[in-house]
Amino acid sequence: MREDRPEPATGNSAAADSPQAGPAERDELDLLLDPRNGLGTAASLCGVFGVVLGTPLILFPVAFTLGVAALTCGIFGRRRAERGIASNRGQATLGVVLGMIAVIEGLAGFVVAAHSISAGGS
Image 1: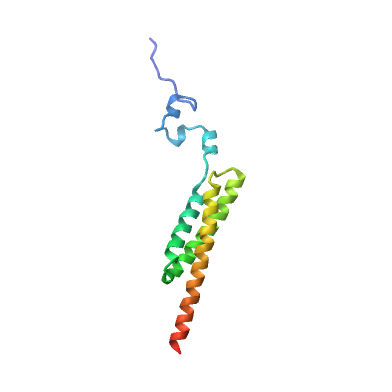
Image 2 (image 1 turned 60 degrees about the vertical axis):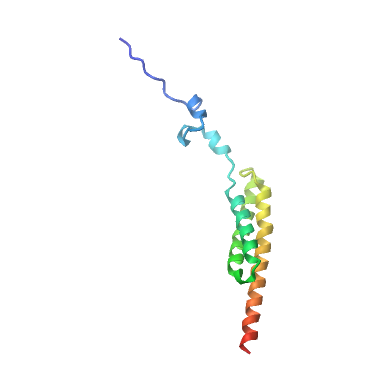
């Protein structure tokens, strides 16, 4: 008597192509080709929030910190896009530009706060 056994799943099976397939069932090539867009996305989000929060100059430390984070993530995100690892170069560039604006807002807020403190103490 012969038992009917199911065939083991391979990387080319229909189970691997299903949207519910886990990472262990996907081809290694698919894992290597997935774009790594996290830095560009983080850069644009930090840049937007930095510029918005830096508009009222009272929040200058937050704007400065988010601006530096946006610049850092944006520069590394652009490098990933140039090497073909990421696919969102424009988003990373937006993060760099907005990060520079947020840093300038943060520095302007610091200057205004320092001037207010020194003028108020005299």
